[in-house]
Image (cartoon, rainbow, N blue to C red; front, side, top):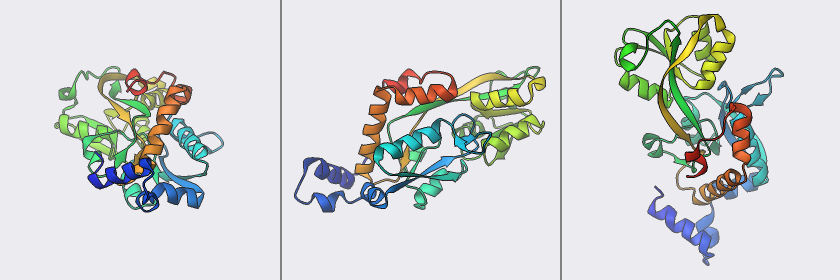
Length: 263
């Protein structure tokens, strides 16, 4: 929730008050003055942000970030980070915003702000076809791989107390551990399961159960009312005209969930 002071600043900006220049000087002005926006993107996340065969960054988050910078009228400077470094990079002011499949959670909202949702992801548990895994209890005694500092890290740690959690710094390393037989099951996204199936079809990994659907937001530091308002307006417009939906479908092969588009 926006603080009282931030609310006053935004009200001043929108009302055109006499002290508007002092009240509205925030990160949006700095970005425009610099002529570039530094956007943190978590590379090594299949479909969201990864390297193509020419070692160029692509994915739905990469394309979304580039489009946001273009529409803001500034240069896109990508800051490549791990999942664990997404929020620390923002807080250390090494990036202006984060577009990195970052789920909106109450815990994260205590320290950073989010735009309205621009995309979504589903967290699942997968294991080989011959392994019986119907719920968290079936993970007891099993080595379960996941990516550090993610919502599935928090959730699986809390609900699969009998599992031996193996944490990896990014999705690419997690996928490699699965393909090379270092874990018995893993908690991640359907896109990462697809990558595992593509790289090791003989191992017959399959989706066992869905953990939760999460809404993804563009992250920014608190007390930035004008930057947040601009991003929210941009997300609304790009959802309404179908641009964000088209980007998501291009990489993920499915439409954005209704709760993102209609929120």
